[in-house]
Image (tube, rainbow, N blue to C red; front, side):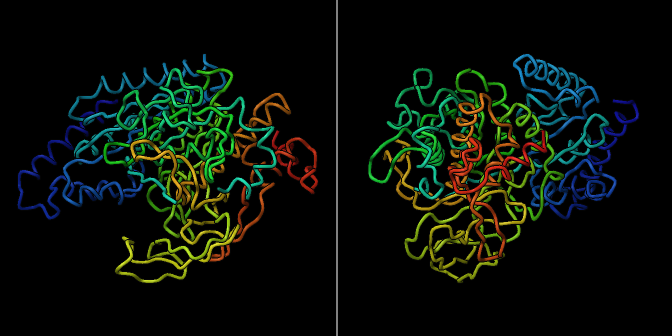
Length: 517
C-alpha cells in the first residue's frame, strides 16, 4: 500500500474519532456513520457493494457489522483458474494464503477489525468492522471490493415418479458420485444414511461444520437430513419413503449454520471451498454436486455485481467440475429470488406440486403477485397467505419465480428423513423450494453417474445444466406466466445415451453441447 493511502486511512480514524467526540452531532446513534456516510455512499466509491444494505446495521445504531473483504488479484493470479488437479488446487491455496498473510501483516489490527474467516481459493476474508475500519479498508488500493456478510435462512416445504426418476433409478442410481449437502448438517446415524460415525459410515463419507468451524457436522435441526434423504437416502420401503433420487451416491455433510440456525454468506462460501479441497478424498466417488437450500435478500435480476465474493467462489467450484444447486426461495416473488440462487453460475430451483392433495395455504410476502388473503390469525409474519389449489406440475404459489430462474422440481409433503434430535427417523411433511433443490441435485447426481458409465467421463457443470434444462417438461407459473423446465431425469439420461426412447430426438438436446465444445 502506498504511503499516501496509508496516511489517508489513518486520517479517517483521526477525523472520525474527533467528530465522534462531539456526541451532540450524532443523529443515528453511530457518530462515525454520521460523519462518513456521504463518503461511503458516494458514486466514486464503487468498492462497497450494495451500500444501502451495507450501512443498514450502522443506521440501526450498531457499532460493528459483518463484511466480506476481497483483495485485488494480480493478472497472473486471475489467469491461473484451472483447478482440475490436486497440484493445481494446492498451488492456488498457497498463493491465496501468501497474499492474505502479506496484507494482514501489513495492516494494524485496529484497521482490519476482527477477522472471523479466511478463504482458501480467493484472496479474501470475513471480518467484523466498525465504520472507521470500513473506511480504512475501502481506502486501501489492495482492496478490490467489500460486501455485507449476509444472513441466510433455510428454505422450508415424493416427487421421484414425477421427474421420471423411477424409470432410470435401477441402473443409474448415483454410483461413482458424491453430493455435498450444504445445510444444517446431516444425521449420519440415521438408518437410511449409513447409521455410523463419519469415518466408518459408507454413505456419509465426510464433512465439516463451517458455521461453527468444528469437525462434527451432526444435524440437530433436521433440514439438512431431510435434504440428504431426498438426494441419496438408501433405498427403502417404509411408509412413503422409497429412498433418494440417487440412492447409491455418497454424501458429504457440510454444516453451514451458527448456533441460531442462520447461515452467514461466509460460512456457505467456506463450505463450497471445502468441497474443492476435499473433492477427491474418496477418488472413486468425487464431489460433483452441491445442494444448498438456503437463501437471503431479494434480487430482481442476476446478482453477480452485488455479491462478487460468491461469484469468485462459484468460478472456482465450477472450474473443479462441481455443479451448484440452490433453492429459489419461498416468498411468492413473481420477479425475484434470493441469493445465492440469483448467481449466474448457480442452478436455481423453484417448486411444483407433485400431485393433487387439496388446498394448501402457504404464507407469501405482501409484494407477491399471487392472489393473497390477508390474515391476522394464521402464523404468517407477512400477514398474507394463498389458498393454493394443488395439482401435479402446478407451480406452488410460494415458489419464487423470475425470468432468470433455471429449473423446477417437485416439492411439498415429502416423506423423507429426519434427524434423531427431533425424535424421529422420518419427516412426513418436508417441502418448499428446500425440497425442490435436492430433488434437482439428486437428478443431476444420477445424470453424472450415467455420464460416467455411458461416456467414461463426468459432465461439466454447463453440460449438466444444458441436459436438465433442454429435456425438462415446460411448466408455466400461473401467478406470473413465466415458463421454465421441470426436471425429467429419464429424458435427460435418454438424451445422454442417445437412445431417443423418451419419444423425442435427442439431437436437439446434444447440439448446444457440441456447439459449446
